[in-house]
Amino acid sequence: MNITLKQMRYFQTLARHGHFGRAAESCAISQPALSMQIKELEETLGTALFERSARQIRLTSFGEDFARRVGAILRSVDELADLARASTNLMAGRLRLGVIPTVAPYLLPTIVSSLTRAHPELDIHVRETLTPKLLHELTEGRLDAAIVALPVSEPSLTEVALFGEDFVLVRPRADADKPVPDGDGLREMRLLLLEEGHCFRDQALSFCNMPSAHPRELLDGSSLSTLVQMVGAGLGVTLIPAMAVAVETRSADVAIARFSAPRPQRTIGMIWRSTSPLAAQLMQVAQVVKAAAEALRAEQSGR
Image (cartoon, rainbow, N blue to C red; front, side, top):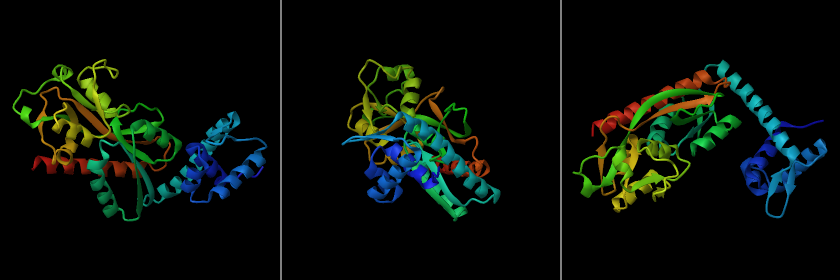
């Protein structure tokens, strides 16, 4: 039986996208060429991998089992390449870095600039999405590391805490002189939150001691920028991480207030597969992220 790595990568991409056109585009080949490769793979195996209909394709029962085995094989192949890179102890080649949306806009410019300046042979690919997707892609081997809020409590992943960060209250400018509420006080206010799926939403609710499925109406936004603009329009109040203040409040008619202790906080860190041969290099990247956060904090405190 002659199954090629190329066929396995094409199969994995098609299984992920569930669509020949999108998968072909992702693989940078034509759709007929992808179809031919999948057909040849199925003929080699002697069974179908996909159920095909006019609108969609889905994995067969055998295809699902095959996908798990293929994923493990391709991860091992990628780790062989990483092992060769690690043996040189150099920061070079491709770095696939995931970042959560409540960190990416504020730290990424400094992180990428610092890494590029210190390691010009590094080819940085950034993926910004929610924590559950980052964990899935990291486990699948599609990312080398991710910057997330800790803990993630995944036994297969290494977690390195980098820095802690306070949350601040954003409220209409007309309320600037009012007392700063505590968590209990926030429960009585119209609290604007990121939509479900964002870990920052859960952290904010935890500070207010509110369940995720709170019966009182809450307004959700897709980004911190949207939330701040909604506050400026008088729709309520919100919490944002301290690193986002300078970017998100510069064009909004809002006031910033800091909470009394115990203040709501989060811990930001970097995670990667515990089996990754690039652990030493990723630890260097983690230190760059930490330095970027410290530089941003110093810049904001000096304003």
